[in-house]
Picture (cartoon, rainbow, N blue to C red):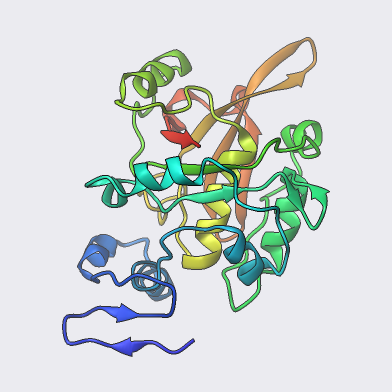
Length: 255
């Protein structure tokens, strides 16, 4: 695709919306490389307004089912004043990919080799959490809209849930691992951004968000956690090995 330059520091691409580059100013940091800066510039210049069925085909070469009936409800929310500034573009989480149930395992395979020069990624390692949950189907197709900012940093899980429930709107108090991983990975593929990243991620710190799934370890069970997205992949782990000081709450709406 060819981009057309503009005198107001914006760029236009077919099917994509313009955005100024001033939002990338905060990337100046001792941990940030030239490639990190380039990724963030591209993210804001070429950010799609949504990641739907057409984008699954464009970036991964796969077919998903028709977008759900909740598309209208999601669009009404997205078009509200200020929502597009405070939230990432909506992402379609499909029920099936090329006729196969959508799972964490299938998502991990797709992000290794995206199409159209997308930014590849992977799971950092095959954890016990993935062993137990990677084949769980995503369930009915839905739209996911996630706030850019995280909250309740370094707090116990109960307080992070309370923070999510205190927000106006119907955000998921306990998020699904496949939903969170889908938002993080699709956003990275098209833009190079690392949400819930390490020190060069969007939050400028290592961060993990707890999910609704439980990981069995011996006689005990612990919440599954996702985060520390870095150049060597996204970590899917469980909370026994990660203290509250590395955690945060993520606000995600499902439509």
